[in-house]
Amino acid sequence: MKEKFLGVDVSSYSYEELKQHILNDIEKKKQSFIVAINPEKILQAQKDAGLLMLLNKATYQIPDGVGVLLASKLYGGDISRRVTGIDMVMTLCEQAAALDKSVFLYGAKPGIADKAKDSLVEKFPGLKVAGVLDGYEKDQDYIIDTINEAKPDILFVALGSPKQEHWIVDNMDKLDVRIFQGVGGSFDVISGRVKRAPAFFRKLGMEWFYRLVTEPWRFKRQIKLPTFLYKVWKNRRRRR
View 1 (spheres, rainbow, N blue to C red):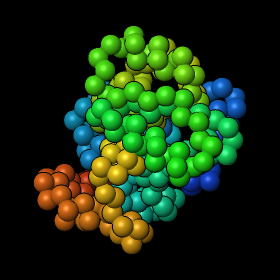
View 2: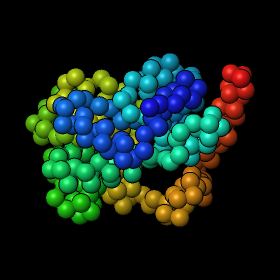
View 3: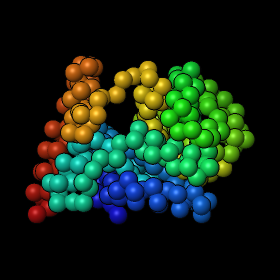
View 4: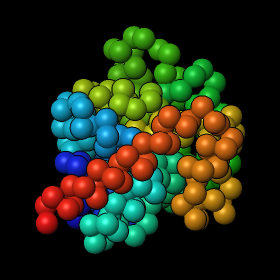
C-alpha cells in the first residue's frame, strides 16, 4: 500500500498495520528497511536521482511530516495520520520489549546513544538493547563486526539523512539484522538532549511550528513545505 508524491513512494499503512508487517518480517527473518519521508527529502530527491532510487528501494517509507499528509489529501489518498520516525522507534522498542526482541543503537555524538539507551530501558522495562555505538567510529569493519556480534533484531541508525540511508543500503547484506531504520536526530530527543514539541503541537500537526519558534535557524528548511505543496498541486493539475 503506497502512494507516490513527485516520484517518491510513501507507505499508507497505519501504525498497527506497520507493526504487524514488521513483526512478520522479523519472524520470517526477512530484512526490511524503514525510511522516514518528509517534504524536504522529497524535494531533495528531485535533484538527486540516486537519492530518489534509494528512498524508493526502502521496504517501508513512513509519512513523517505534515506536508506528506496534506499532499495525500490533495491527491485524495489514504494517508490519514503521520508516522514519525521517532514514534516508529518508540513503537518498535515497545514491541521488542513485549516480544523478547533486541535492538541496537548506532550513531549520534559520543554518549548520546548511551543516554538514549537508558531512557528506552526505563520506559520499556525488559527491552534488550544488544549494543550501542556512536556515529564517530570510523572503522567500518569494526562497526559491522560489533553489530553482528550483538545479533540485534532491529538496528536504529542515527547518522543524519541521507547519509544514514546510504549506509544502511550499502551494508544490509553484511549485517545479520532483520529490521533497519534511519532515525535522524531521534537519539538526541530520546536522550533528553533536545526537547520535543509538546503533545498539543504534535496532535495538531504543528510540530514544525514549535521547532521553528524554538529553533529559528530552521526557517530555510521549513520554507520548503509550501514549495513542496505547490509542486504537488501543480503536478496534480498537470496529470488531470
